[in-house]
Image 1 (spheres, rainbow, N blue to C red):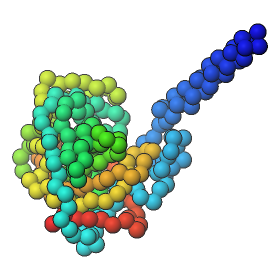
Image 2: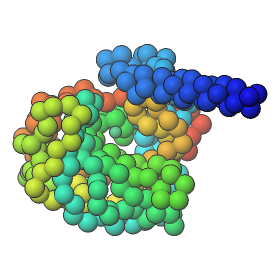
Image 3: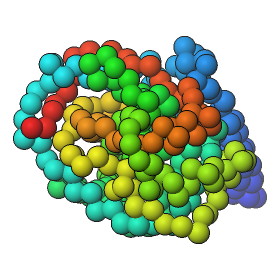
Image 4: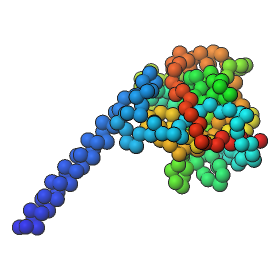
Length: 253
Ligand SMILES: [Zn+2]
């Protein structure tokens, strides 16, 4: 009898605990944020919110204040994959369900997705670029994130990769659509893969820190028309630069 009561109590307790957990998780996933209220990002009720931290992204890269050295090459093992595109309410994002990956400093990272900011989040010597593309990678061993930032400026021909989806942006938020086309993200990289490297954070809440950031030194050039089409969709989805503090910025030579 006693055992029965204890067991029932345990089950009731487990049920309540379970409910409590889901209540705690559910509202967090619905925490609303936008680019107009960045001053309050650090107060958002998100687990482990680090938006007020000291190693945040983006930053201004002062090219005269970097440590120039032989840095590891970017092993961009990208291949063509079908376009799965989503408007998540903050940016246009292409999800990778293929095998594209990055080998960097003897570690393997899977390419999760890439997305666009307008104008750029990073600045170089105080200057922003018209756009910035973020290629988000996740380590297959420890789950750590490595993001490659490519700054974009106007000039010349339309980019073939962007042409595949620029007229197919989703009309509904948070609904992924699959296009009957493939792209290779390598087409969104400039010829030179020299880069800056530093430790930073996600640039959106919860601004989690400890990300390995690689920002290419050269910019990608795309057509004025393509930039305008992105700007017509998202024209202010960037976080302003934050203090570099005591961080070192490395630069590949
Ligand atoms: Zn981003």
